[in-house]
Image (cartoon, rainbow over all chains, first blue to last red; front, top):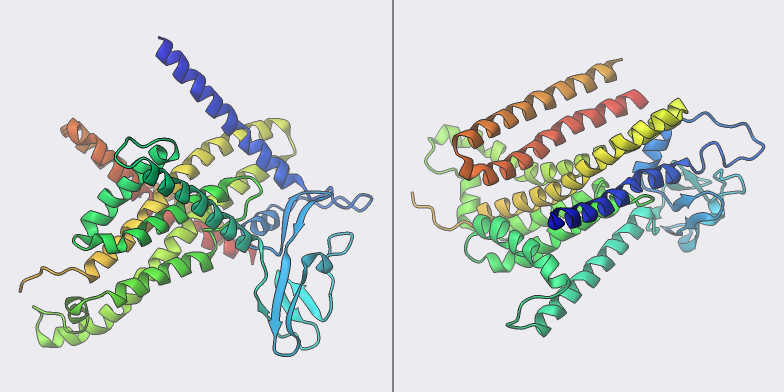
Length: 347
Length: 67
């Protein structure tokens, strides 16, 4: 009985913490839309615009109205004007409209030169880049602590953050990497672990209120998929390439037909990896934001209450999806690498 | 309106797919309760994959609805 009570107490703390996420997200959503221009006409709440704006990248990090905006640095390079670094604050006037500054103008979050209208090389620290740096810092902090723990507790039972992450690390090694890559799996294990935890932490960070959509950015997922693609094809052994270009066990005319299909197959693998993670995370965020926007569209407290409950439920699903998408990306990566380095087929 | 129909069809597709997975998983678990842990794990992963396909259609419908 006391076990049940302590369990219930722990769960109630967790549930109360989770119930605070939707209101915090609602709070984050509320700023800037309809309350920014005091004295101006109150803009009608445009759900589509708000949702798309929250899912895409941005040069500023807007946390709350009136002082809660972080103006991230803009770093642009163009052959005409060279490298310039300035705060994105210059691009916004007092009423949060975009203005032209020093020969650059901001159009739908892309920076162009004012005279020629040409695009510039935009290397700014945008919201997603800042999230990426936060994610990387978090990964470094956590895993250096884990590694230090292992060094200190050699031969002894794990303690602290070691014991929290060890089951997950062992899960990735024993369920994802070892069965799919087989022998020599230790060479690929660092990359697989990094991939798994980068995607997992990125997904989870993106669910926090006010956070940027890191793994829902197709450039980020494309980079991860391209790294897997490079590793697969560089480590591909003779058997792998001979299966693609000269499929054994198949009559000759069919081999000519299979050849373009196999070549396309090399590229569909990173393509599917990219799209899967990007769509899962972005669509999850869009669903969450749409449910929150319901309260603003209907402008009613009852709808707000119902939408908070629905958002709580969907957030729990999104937590599950965060873990599953990290697992699936790592699983498919190790499958592809395993297929490319497989060594024991006899014909 | 096309976007709305598309989103509805995507939901139907996801519903059918996940429903079938759930049904087979239930059947498998009923036949062999010892394997229920593995079946549950595999079911969740495959449901996520199907969900991604449905959400992909949803995103395309949203893009159509907005432009």
